[in-house]
Image (cartoon, rainbow over all chains, first blue to last red; front, side, top):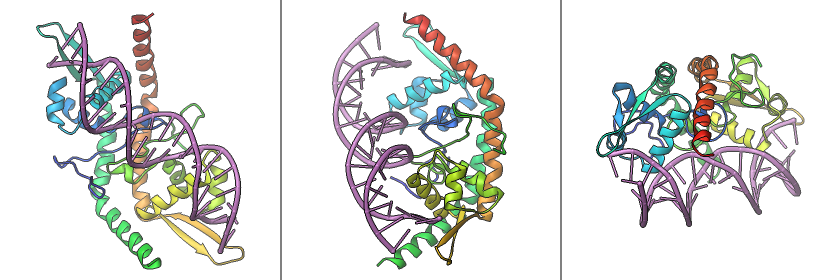
Length: 130
Length: 130
DNA sequence: CTGTATCCCACGCGATACTG
DNA sequence: CAGTATCGCGTGGGATACAG
């Protein structure tokens, strides 16, 4: 889909993704969306799906497991009929918010510069090999 | 390594990596290592290789191209014999430093919490399926 | 010295189907 | 409702070889 598109449809931005190395072990493609939701209030599984329509079940499950394993979110099973599950952000998770926001803010501030740099670079490239 | 640094198994640092979404288009597996080097002084290609022994030629080239395309680093060809190339960080690149440091600092501060959370999570998992 | 060209594999993620 | 199971694909990136 979008290549030069830093925003999702809610005007949000995303960072980071998979693979090895430190924060890669903490964050994945959908982590920030989930974090954004859970920072505002606890959410049930399908609430999250509704809030982030593009995510698949599998990916959401994976994201939540990863965040849970890293102590960023909490999973609370509510024994009702039928079973309900509630996800909440932990204190540790809250401390992640600021660093991430700083990064996101940088991205927002400089996305124009970056796109300009890309255009310039790509143009030079085209001009060089017709 | 002049850094406040969370480590992987080899004592190194890193965030972010590949795939789609904004910063993924800016940073890859080795970007931070390169940035750290270039923040201190301009570097030649093989200087960077020596400074970051684990990176392959291909990956370093790719990282540098990506950072160059995004206006984070500059590539200066020095017409000498044999050809020399110098990489320097740009003003835009310097603005990336702070946000990244904030993230790295978070990671450093909370890596213990994360590891503890993981151990707890994994233990519960093991206990559940013997 | 500074790259480019291939080959190849691992893994993140989506699509789809099934379950308690 | 809240997942798990399977499959296949795209892509990052390591290894290796070659080139200006």
